Every structure is written in structure tokens, then in C-alpha cells.
Length: 151
Image 1 (cartoon, rainbow, N blue to C red):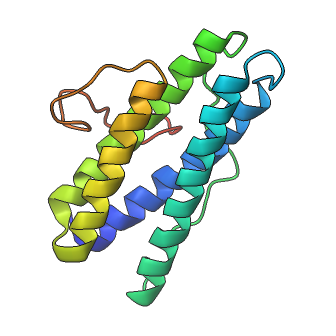
Image 2: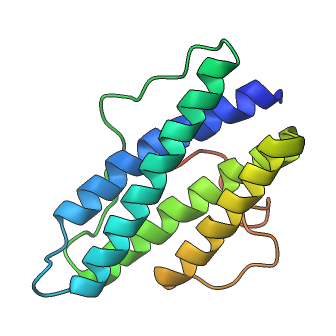
Image 3: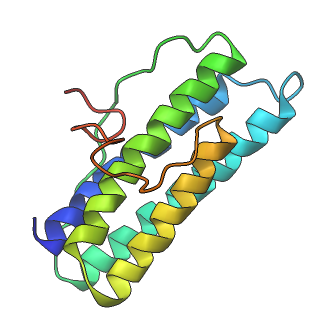
């Protein structure tokens, strides 16, 4: 995979993450679960920042950034905090897989960015009750699809 393709895939994953995190946030009550609502807000802000950074990088390279889809797959079981946490964890794991590919495909400053994002994503997985992984986003923990996308 070329570096540009990896960045485009990461941008597509960030678009999906924003859409899904927005949905998860809408399902979370600030009055009954303020901690979870705060974690979702933080995740949303991080994914928005990544989306914007990736868009800047791709435009600077002369590429047309991939557009967001109109909608993404809706995770199931969003009626409980545990279900929302599972959906958020799955989303972060999907993003980790995509960012691991960016690490594999880039060098220099872009690889440093990808490593930093992969590290942040691995830590965020812990917020959503994930378990520490030796190599976050590695083939042993990743899926073939990015977050919110059908197989």
C-alpha cells in the first residue's frame, strides 16, 4: 500500500469514527452516565482533529481527500452503557488497525504521527474496557474492514 493510500484509508476511518461516535454520544445520557459521555466527547474531539490533520496532509500532497459517506453501519445493542462501551471499543480497535497500516506504509514525520495516533487509540481502548495489546492494531487484533464499514 502506498503512503497516500494508507492516509486515505485512515481518513475514511476517521470519517466513520466521527459518525459512529456522534451516534454513541447521542445514546448516552450526561445525567446518568457523565463519565461515559465525557469519554465519548474526548474520543469525538480526537477523531475530529485527526480527520482535519489528514485532510491537510492529503491536500498538501495534491490529493483529493476521500469524502465521508452519507451513513455508516449502526452498532447493535446501544440500549445500555455496556453496549455503548463495546461499540466504542470496537470502533477504536478498527481505527487502530487502519493506523497500524499507516505506520507500516509511511516514514519520517508521517510515521511519527501514525505511531502517536496508534498509541492514543490503544490508550482510548482501555477507557472503553479494552485490554492492553502488545501490538495494537496488529493482524491478531484487527479486522479486514475499517470502523463502521461493512465487510
